[in-house]
Length: 164
Image (tube, rainbow, N blue to C red):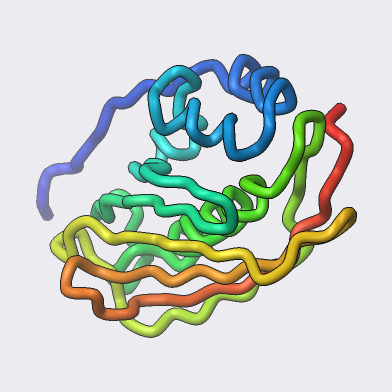
């Protein structure tokens, strides 16, 4: 039997991030995350991914697959991959939102095309909006490795809300 592995990490205060979100447009808020003025959310620390680019209707995340995220068959768990996709799609829709608006996921469909392992290296998640209206938005995402191989795809619908 091999020695147990462990990891230590920290995360920012989620309340301060959530409080900053409704104070500006969605795109401005995401730019503040990218610049480091607002920290990446705690889930990004937990699953080792980060928002690295945002423009109206399109965002890019980078993720670093690790073996602590493995399932019982020795690859990154589908729930982790779904989290990358869900986050990127939510951010893409958020780029269209005005100050005082928020969103939540209504549905998410993920298609897993290739296994992802820690030695896959950095993966890129790009999400694009298909439609953003007053009450809902739809978008899709692609997850690719450094060789541009398609690893997974996702689609989602989000509900647009007034921020509380």
